[in-house]
Length: 171
Image (cartoon, rainbow, N blue to C red; front, top):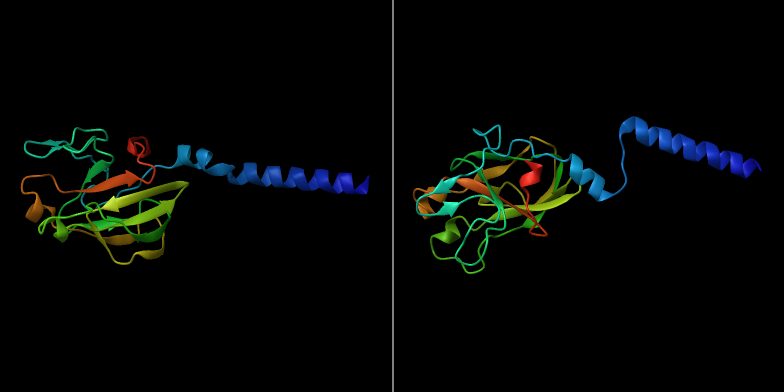
């Protein structure tokens, strides 16, 4: 009987603490709460890249030569500072091109990140480091010189979910 009372008190205390601090179980609950903070200096609202005459559009699912666009492009000027959108863990290098041309090699860089129940990649970014943790708003690195590779394209960082699902709902 005493054990049952102690267990009941402990369960009630844990549930009350979770409700008080807003804790929820599992990543599916966390995903519904996560919104990306500003990614790039000069773009505090995470304005998305529209369509460029010669380069297509930056929306998820936009037409591409090799199938639909599997990410979302957020405007970011060449050389701009790229920030952690929320508390994140840096999980290594990510590269957008498997067989880059000589020019594409200039921007074939990025980082794998996780946080807030999400796993995602940022491309065209030269991170200060590929491993470790950052708090929301900390500097990740700088945007590579996209204009040298794609003149006339709106410079941007490409946000791609690890499972290649649509990241738009997180913005």
